[in-house]
Length: 110
Figure 1: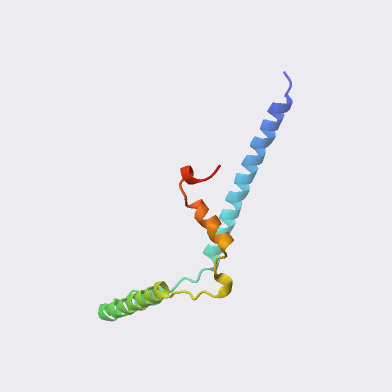
Figure 2: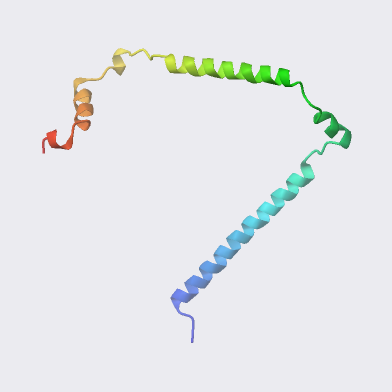
């Protein structure tokens, strides 16, 4: 029994899918290898120095300062009222069409 056109197409598709996933896995492996080779690992003495306990009071002060700055920024950003210019004013045509979209379906003319 010979291969039909449909079965040939399915085999070609299957092979293509396998090749695509194999290529993705090869690229992933190469990237992992490059990351492994190019990372700077700290020596044991540097690792011990970096993991020393920090001053928790100073850390809390920095967190509180960041929270205040964020709150002030959000408050100022929400309180800004944009000034409208003559170009931004709605024309009667625009106003009519915007209001038309907000009316219930039964009030619209057909």
